[in-house]
Length: 135
Image (cartoon, rainbow, N blue to C red; front, side):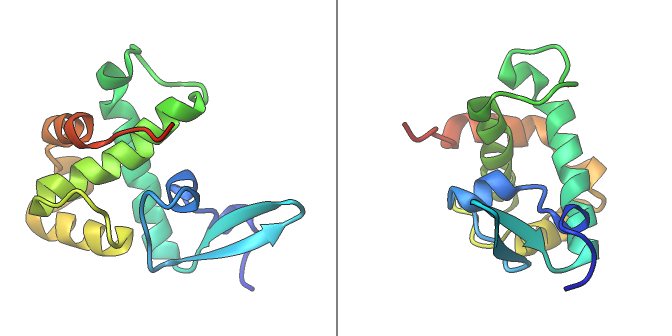
């Protein structure tokens, strides 16, 4: 196994563990009494970390906060991660099920270029329309 656990942690671990999304680039491992999700590819991990940061900065209004510096409560984190990926999937191809995060980011970059150029207003609106938190 290459690298430490933290060097390979998945940016969207919560969404993968709750089965909100699937990603072909992750592998699950048991660490003590918990399950961790690790990325198999450094390029994919870097891209997901970038997208996660962009989602955090663009979801402030949708989450009812002015800025996000601290960790979010679980429900808000799920709205950000799962909702953000569902919203992006909807903007890219009109579907609301994320069948593979890696393929979604490939398609998003083909459609919009760099991740910074994604239409985040549309992504946030689609997330608000299509993401439902499981109770």
